[in-house]
Length: 246
Image: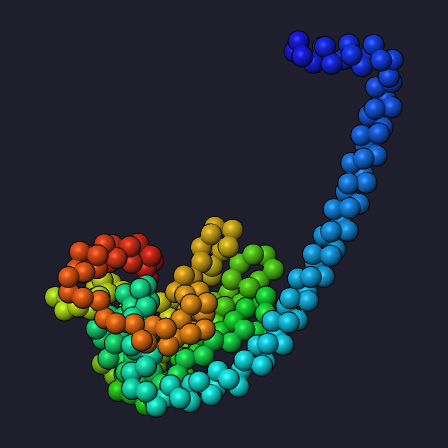
């Protein structure tokens, strides 16, 4: 309070009009707002340009990705190995999932034409004894109200088959998924996601932004040594938290 009074006294001593000072302040703020509005317009134009470039290069990448998928099809268990070598995705595959993934021939991630509106992840399987489908698609559509609409191909399981239950086995160098975790539980989960609540599909994001761009990185990874058992147990605790909603 003492400091405020001294400031007022100094202004009065100079004979300045407080109304004039307030007017100058308002004028400065208005000019500053005009500049911010101009910057915001430039930023919006830049964002649109970035999206245009991203859409352009998505089209350029598409035939290259197709060529890559053709080569991958000739490599046995490529996607199974890449998933299992991934530090997080590998823990999503239980033992039964791994048997099913031997039939996974290709994986595709595709942004919508309007990049910021969503994307899809497609899993192409060879004919297998587990389900009728050969193509499973999970789609994420970003809605204007800040939510994400999630859809997935209903899996037509063959008689006696269904979402595999994890089986706890002794570890032999490979990480094992907890008993209640399955890749197909994640795939079939289509609960709407609310960005405002910071609920994100970490599995989808890992596939899209980490595994898909360069799966060869994970395919070439060496399997963890048995001596890393303690670290594996710690990782399992983390994965239990990450995938507890399935």
